[in-house]
Length: 389
Image (cartoon, rainbow, N blue to C red; front, side):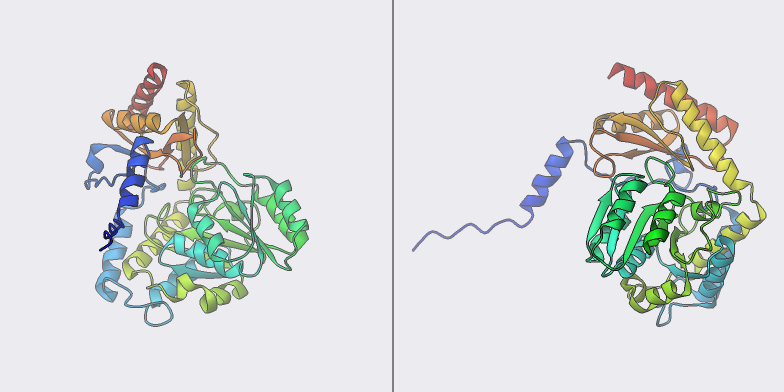
């Protein structure tokens, strides 16, 4: 009898890939935190306004959970739409200056629907610095995708002018999630308006932060009422809750209800999260000074880093990157920060380009002067570490 062939191990390739990532300093590890954040000052989360533990949000979520239960019980088109969802959509329209709003169970899913559904059959032009959810949405659109250099309006204009497709959409983050810079929205809209294209703006890191009242970057640029501008937002960052939404013209919203797979086939956002987001929008309405506080704190963090000789940028919103280079340096810097009382985000490839691993600090409106003193001590230790590496 011929010798039996050895049955291949279907998991071997995963172990090999994990070992390769380990050697490159790119393994990810889940680390559970405690309710008091392990006693560390939080500069890693996206809780920009400090609302995630605000009693007003907590009480709103508890009351809604008692009234409606712990889940929405179904997709939005079946049983998952409640009176609370309608109230939140109405409130978001009013606050953001939009004609229509549609709530999703996450900002990621809102981006998938907005780009994949609206971009189907069209040319999709995406900024090279866009979030992974936009990258995935571009792929799901099954359309031709052109990736343009970061913030390059001329490249977008060229792609629009040379397209063969009748329709096109241009999609960009408003505030980019790692570099923290602001997209050239006015220039992008001028280009899309000239060429009859839609502009889709992901406001995840700008809602609650950019603009005099935190109504987002598109609103601050005077584009909120433009029918050819579509915005996506998350409820899980500045608004301290969970979920996402798409803001746009009635035709856009109806298209997503009819064809947006990540809307049609997903369970609706839980009532407690809806109520918490409603409470957060009300707080922003009555405390318009909060967005300015976030931006001030971000500028202070960036100035602190520059004073210590660390590479950073000029933050448009809450995000302050500190570029350290290799993954090992970023991992070590995050540990040094923790040793000095600060939790910092650590970003490595593929989240950032090779050679641009960094600490990602996020400012909060409720950072105190005492907090800043501790943060300075942690960044001083990082600067000293960098010198000795």
